[in-house]
Image (cartoon, rainbow, N blue to C red):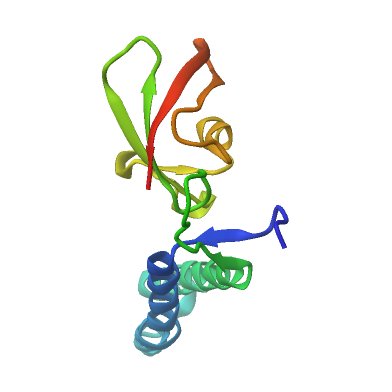
Length: 156
């Protein structure tokens, strides 16, 4: 099942997407239908900005519903790993060789990757270099500045 289409998600992200989808299908669709009905009541649809805006909102909402449904249909929940090997769901602390500063990242699926939250995709250069490594292992990965060498300080 580890195909390119598999969408790895944490339980939390899966729940967020499911909740958003439910809201879009119920509350949001009803609100847009009411906006369309009101806009129709204003008369001539060819020059009706409210109607055009409501139609655009409807199209964007239906597109978002389709995207979420697609993500959820290929979703696989990340189980929090046990053990001392880096895998999806691991929180990994690394240190660049020759430096004292440490950085901690959570390994997540592509849909959840966010550098501001220190969540990196298992498919990113750093994420893929970390996969299946153990504590104290050294590894390198290519960056625009050339190959960088790091050591794994801790895995949770």
